[in-house]
Length: 440
Image (cartoon, rainbow, N blue to C red; front, side, top):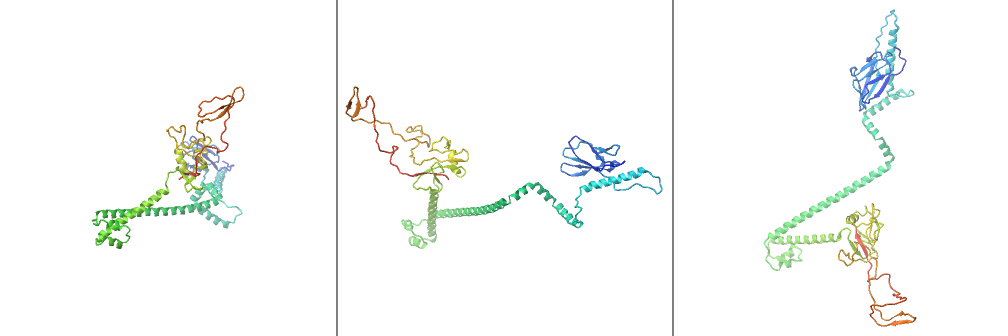
């Protein structure tokens, strides 16, 4: 056999779930000189033993292998030259010359060289112009990479993310600072929460002590003095109280002191609770009359302004849940508007308006919905006539005198004059104030 080709590898062949026959285009002298590698779906490569496949050779030394079952999809088969590095040809001195023996030895030598060439092609090499002294450094770098191979593979998987991080390093540093500030704020909030919990626990302890003092006072022997209770009012020290209680026992005196302390504590707590209630009075959406030009905290003027729903979430939730939002394009100016329908809503505009109680089925001001606007008007009425003139047939003017006429017929034209001075509307006396709505 003559090896005139430099082919030293066939494949890798991809499995398709049906193929079992795979060719090799290099020449081998016997099946044992063929190396069959199997690669599974995870990339693990394994050498197959000779009984895992069947080799069929053509006349020129090439051939193919046949697997007992189809190669699954996602797996691979690679075929390589694999002659042994031995020399078994023996040429005795002055023996018979047999060109076939020499040719076979040269064919095997060529196969070994092709095998080496295939393996060297997959090896790490330095440039021909590099100094061999640099080889040790290269090998050391390779060993370090091998030790960190898992980390390198992980970095390869997030290469795009690393590039993106590098491009946005300034934003990342800013975000880190913001995160630190947020963490500090969270710590401060946690400290405040802890202090609040401590204050709550202390108030519970104080309440428990006060209740115990109350129970003790109720079970103690009363001090028999009709006006002593009144005399004790205004006494702040134990010495002053003893001037009223006289020779009462120490335990009795202490009972009275504890009872008075309990009473004072309850009065102070009730006063504090009343202040808190007054400060937060009124639910979201409640409307007040304000006598200053600037609204107080938590209130907005009803001036028709458009608001962002996320800036005033409590007010929007209240109005929306009550079904008060009207279409922005068709609503009256005194009603709530739905804004752009997704991110905004609008306040009613009550500037310059009078208020009237909603009829709500009474029948006095029918046909009105909540917050609807009503134009000014004059109530229908009659006036009595005293003396007036009307044209008569045939020319001239006729006079009619008298009062209280309920029926009058006039021919021609009749003109009536209203007052030449006055306001734009009929109204009562008013005071200008500001209408406000609570938004949280």
